[in-house]
Length: 398
Image (cartoon, helix red, strand yellow):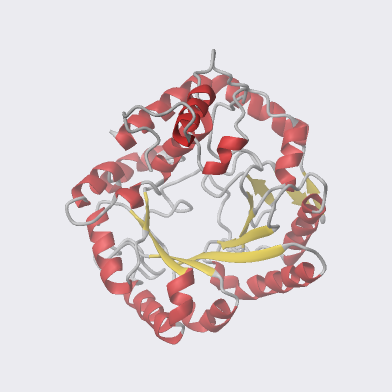
């Protein structure tokens, strides 16, 4: 129902009261209230409410995708050494987090924690996935915490472990770039295409566990010069009745000598979505892309007159202060554990500046040091982030 129809509304009507409430609530702020302090206290509270732990199970992979963020084109990650994570490191981190999750700073209303398994290809080290889930299930029985699981996989080993995956209701994100030609950058170590093996495994999973497939399986495609948004949606929607998420090539950490190769491979996501508009309703999908999500975050976090849900109207804070960035905030949404014991804000950034590290069965996390580093970062980038968010806002909505 519209808030305002243009007609005269009686002063004592419900609609009139609502309009007056909105007018009073949505006043423009007198000045921008950006702050660059991110205190150690705030970091500790973030940790207590952290709801997503992502674990790099292994840095081994059974594919050699040409555009891989850990491949030859990029240089901002730790060297791949065919190394597995250890249960000791994972248990150490979970026990460390459990203390925070059990503290009075935990304000989560449902106590659900999402545990993601990442690689490399995580199924290469399936035994560690199972050992981790066993430990978390035992922990859940002793507390009010509940755990849900997710995994990003290339699908090559699904035929070996699909019974366990379906039984544990692991949210599965399968990497697939479209049809056989679209997917041709995704090759095995011997250079042969992976497409037919992946499709066979996915079809078997769908046939054996149809309800699980419907509820817990989705696809992610990477956009490049051998596919398009139209190609990706057409193939995956027709083949599996799923709308995939679509990501762009990583733009950070490209080696200088690989820049020409990157430019040749790169495809503009916005332009490709526009080309697909005549065939599909791409608006909802586009709003899920990283750049659009960033613009949406900016609108909700930094604009004084927007509300994400109706209940926000009753806890509105007109004096809210804003941090001048909305991506990879330390300990805000996610924590990523690498095979080398590094703790990062998320998996999509370089591994040069960890938030902490696991050494000798202990978690070392310097909250004061993290606070000082991010203050310096915010001070330096405040104007850049504001201008970038406005650019993304205009690009995404007009």
